[in-house]
Amino acid sequence: MKNNINSGFEHFSNLSGDYGAKALAPVKEHFPELAEFIMGNAYGDIFQRTAIGSDWKEIAVISSLITMGQYEQLGVHYVMALRVGMTVEQIKGILLHLVPVIGAPRVISAFNVLLETLEEIK
Image (cartoon, rainbow, N blue to C red; front, side, top):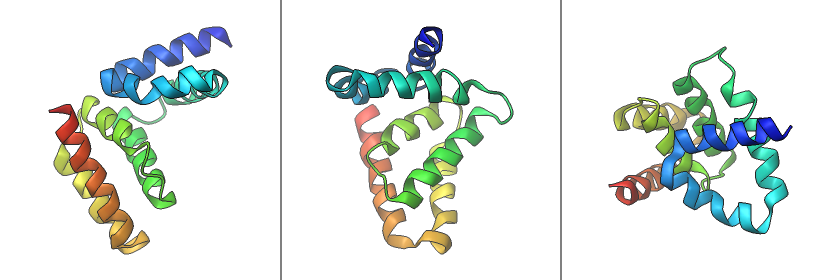
């Protein structure tokens, strides 16, 4: 399991860079067991599988987070989507496609996070 955790941290760092490190720091410091669980299972295993491409993985995660109304982690996944080659226009396309399914208010909130994230990584 330790190998998965180390591999997960490395994979997460490669995908999210400094933005992800900053977001993860409080969890690592105050709840290291949760950080290890996420890194070992999600990033050390599931997110490294190759059945779908990295862009599709981010589409799935971004869409799911928005659908659940969980905006706090969106910034990290927007950064990851950009780092795996997606464009801002493609991310906006994801948001637009969610409007008929989950409604404009959640998408507007997700778009505001996108704007904040883009400003922060400028």
